[in-house]
Length: 367
Image (tube, rainbow, N blue to C red; front, side, top):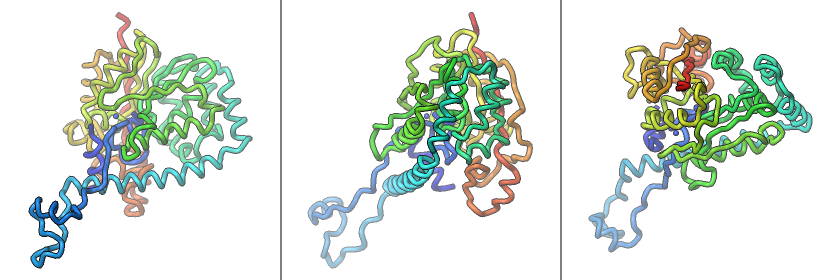
């Protein structure tokens, strides 16, 4: 928990989940956050420099052990170490996924993207079974109910849809082929060409590689690179639907929820839909505290979204999970698919399943 909260603190400054990170399946340090991490400062080699800081010079009989790094230096070093580990893990997984994409899978993916679906039901009947989807992602269908969720939001294959914070692409795998022929999918991303030591750069590169791996199915996806500190979509009355999956806790934590909602409101056409899926905290929870655990109270989310000009159009319990007690040692990341505790109490958390989530539909007034 200390490591995760450390990462959260360093990147708070976003996608996902979502992402966003938003949609990331690892503990979310803030969708698209742009914070750099550097190695801890070292003790100067110059004895004069050491003396200037009050530290004993090398060789001084009274010299003691090297000065203890400051708490901030320790945080930076730990964040850099964690980022390096995450990069190594991703590289290994990406190589495995690259190898999985055989010519046969590419051909099937192209056929799915080229098809002209008459309805969402027809599209998802084919897309959800597509071999282009990561096997690990397919396992989540039973918990995430993509067909029921997108039907509740009212999505159709003809729409222009913006996915804010796609994370590792769980929903992108479904949305891209569904919308490729008759509609359009736009996703947000952080800058993949940013500083190498920035976690946001890692997230940007991860999504870029995901999309570039299979132009047969993702070639028509439009990417909007945003600055997490001042998120601007640069579009007005352009999209029919904005989707934010499991990312609002990060946006609230980083004080970006209202700026992102304002951009979503501008991007939507009058009458357009904002679809929200979010880990749900207990009703009396303090949102500032529960957000650190990945959860937000439903009433708080509704209030915040309506404050941005939207109108609540409906609620669904399709992603509810009454077995989620919402008091786990590593927050929502204790549960599948992250299972932050590893093998500790694994069976217990697998039995609970994924989090209890609100599923809310909002509309932009037609005026």
